[in-house]
Length: 154
Image (cartoon, rainbow, N blue to C red; front, side):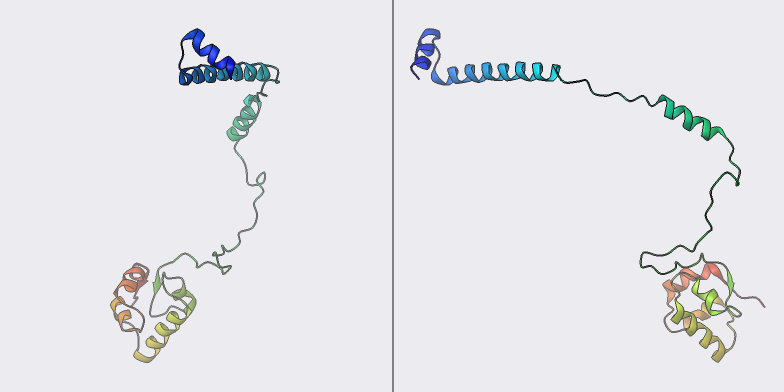
């Protein structure tokens, strides 16, 4: 460390200033080494997407007929639990609807559909959609969900 004291005396640096100077010189030297090393590496490969883009544009411009498309047959969509998803709700007559029709309504399962049918058989036809409130398990919220899909035909 004698050379460090000699360096400090010669240039008039304090020990902290000389450490900073050596740190900067070291950093400069590492930067030069890195630049030399990277200059010897092969350049990064550039990929030209123009060919792929032109193929995409030409195929997009074509009108495709059903024969050219590979269409797989429609299968029922499954829920996340592996059970078939409910079909899309449709408008039903609640006085003549079967169990399968009620099941398509939002919030109505097999048990609730059976309760509606049993209530209808025991008490006669419904006179209004609000009569569904008399079925055990159907409250105002559930009725508000299913009412747009329920009608009564005379």
